[in-house]
Image: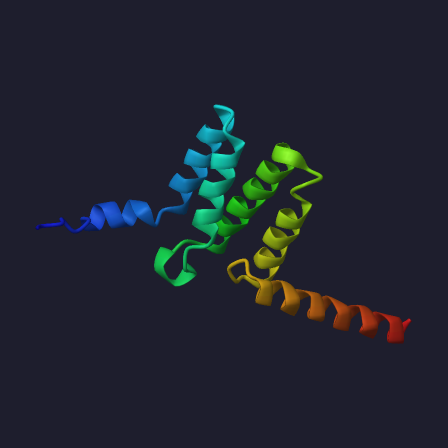
Length: 117
């Protein structure tokens, strides 16, 4: 049984964050917010070392994902929004570890400000 390997061109497109972004916009415009959010999450969870994309692309995807979550249901999706923003600042895929690390950093900075003022 032969399974063809993806061509380098297909692999290149598979790692193109701009294509994910545009596809998500298309899904959003057709009314499928859940699918649009899923496409953006998939792109943001790709290992950054394999994409060779500038950080600006990740920022754009993160912003679009936050918009998508807020359009979907801003009250129910607020935890997802926080996760995306934390991962954007931490420059790591969204995970519980990244959230805890960011919260610890935030608490340290808050404590330092309290001592200073």
